Length: 261
Image (cartoon, rainbow, N blue to C red):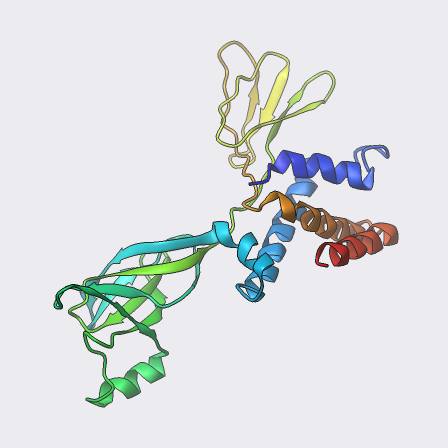
C-alpha cells in the first residue's frame, strides 16, 4: 500500500512546483491521481501473468475462492458477482458432492450464442460433470451477474481481479496560515479551533472547536512501493499536458521508460 499523501509530497518534490507557488492544488492532484491509478491498473491488466513484474504488482488485486450463492431463474442458476469485480482469473468451480470423495468441477465460460448451441445438443449440453456459465446481466443494485448450468449447482467459487481503490487525499486548513493538514485513511481527527474542513462528499463546511471531529475521506493506493516511480512518472506526464510544460512531459515519459526497463 502507498500512502496518497506521500505520493502528493513526493510529486511536488519531483517537479519542484512547490517552489513556484501553489501550482498544483490538492483538488487537481486528486483528479490526476485517479486517472493515473486507473491507467497503471489497465497497463498491468494487459500484461497480467505474462511476466513476473505484472504478477507481483497485481497480487494484491487477486481475490481467491470467493463463494457465490446461486438461485434458480429462467432455467439457470443465477448469482451476483462481488461489487468490486473486474474480471475472472481462471475458471469458476464448484465442489461436486455426488462423488466420494467430492471433487472440484470447473465451469466453461461461454457466450450466449455458444450456450444456446450447446444446449440444443444432448452430447454438449451442460451437466454436473461439465458445467457452464455466462457472465452478464445485472441485479437490482446494478451489480453484474453470473448464470450457471445445470440447475443442480447451488453455489460456486470464483477467482477474480478486484477493481482498484480510487485514491483520494483529504485535508483541513488552518484559518490564518492556510497550511493544509492531510488526514489519514479511516481516521476521525479532532478539528481544533482555528481550523476549517470542507467535506468533499457533502460540500458541508465545518469550523473547528472543542469536541469537533470530522471523518476523513482519504483513500490510499493499493500498489506496492516498487510501483511508486511509475506512478510519479505518469503524474508528471499528465501535468505536463495540462500546464502545458514540455520539460515535465518529456521528463515523465523518460522516467516511465526507465521504470519499465
